[in-house]
Image (cartoon, rainbow, N blue to C red; front, side, top):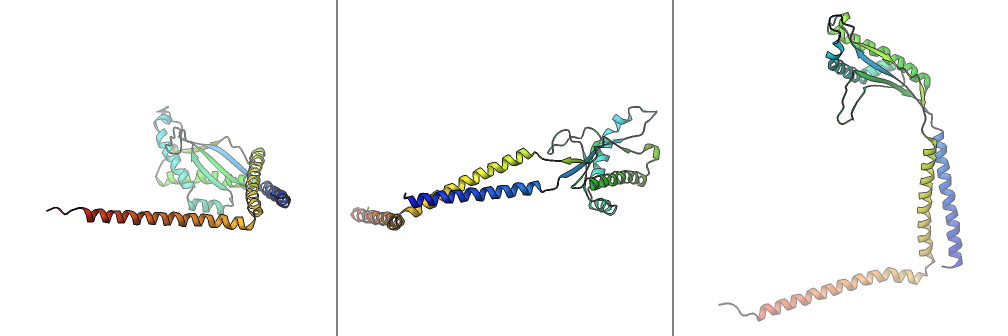
Length: 249
């Protein structure tokens, strides 16, 4: 490789490094410019009123409470209920999910306990939507039981506690920057390899490149001709052998 090819390779490598650094800086700036997410959550306990005749009513009716909580969570995720939240001024995302003691494939809801969450990029919107969802949760629970004719002293209630308030959710900046640095290193390595191949190929004389391209085609044609001649020879030998063999009487 001559001196002009080495100089061209050096300048192309520097240009590749500059391009990768600019792209990495733009990506980091874009990630930093994204607004953080605020999350507010609280625990929801579906419980029965105190019973004087049966002090262990909670343990007897726990499966029913779990089923009721699961139904309420599905109703809250309904588009109609979500539309009511939007009309009331809630703009954040709302979710109510029973606490799963096992995994997503085989869920196990051992307690009538759920988690109510709301999240958005605004702390005020997150808190306002959470309050609307909490009020709507009580209304849905009371209306269902009233339509079913359940007496007031036997109705299920939803007790909400451990409200966290709007909490900012921030990712790890070290992991983000480490990932960007890793991508930059990989991109630089790929560009350097591509530049080396291009410069090495262009540094060869033109006749050598043509001979290299034609050599493969010539080799393929020679192999095809040899294979065709071999097949013709085998066919002729087969015909001769058949002609010499006497017919059986």
